[in-house]
Amino acid sequence: AQSVTQLDSQVPVFEEAPVELRCNYSSSVSVYLFWYVQYPNQGLQLLLKYLSGSTLVESINGFEAEFNKSQTSFHLRKPSVHISDTAEYFCAVILNYGGATNKLIFGTGTLLAVQP
Amino acid sequence: GAVVSQHPSWVICKSGTSVKIECRSLDFQATTMFWYRQFPKQSLMLMATSNEGSKATYEQGVEKDKFLINHASLTLSTLTVTSAHPEDSSFYICSAPEGGRTYEQYFGPGTRLTVT
Image (cartoon, rainbow over all chains, first blue to last red; front, side):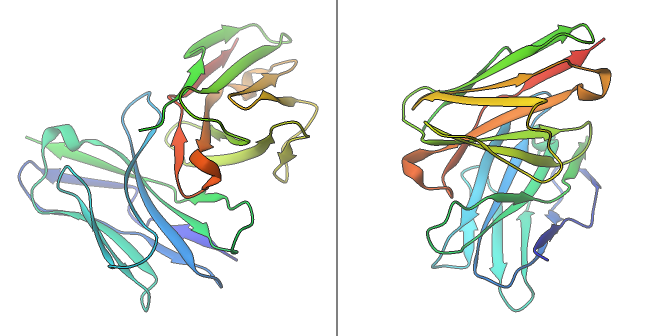
């Protein structure tokens, strides 16, 4: 069965430290990969996505993620976090069935808690 | 970027009553919209796919008669929770793909429903 796994439910980290949020997926078809961020009582905002091409994708606020097909992973990293990065982060995939209405499948989320 | 709005942002209703939640794509047309449900500190679970001009497609385990979906126009989908009960209390989020590209989904800010 296709699924998305975020092993860490919560990641505490000090401000200005590096962080990695892990995401693994399982799928029998090709995938599109996404990271979304959710601030308290708000909807989801797209952080970055991988559709094709370069396996390293970056966001405008310093996050990056690398698609690793052999390890079926799409880990999110930031070299130096800020207090404002505190939020819930969701990894998601779309299973690419080639034209069909494709659905987003979400992981369980990781709470990034940045401490001063 | 594309904007999706939801109304209301929060609602409290009494057990047994019905409540309607609206999802609008403000600057683009969406023949398809998605409705998600999110329990506290949990991931988003797809409830149904709303299709303009036709019946919604519900995910397994979602009661069609309980959660009525109407996609009346290319910019509006509504979710009506009928005969609400306290267990229906949740955060409801909609999304819409721009240009029919499901990998370009934009999320609404969510609606917090509390049933007393």
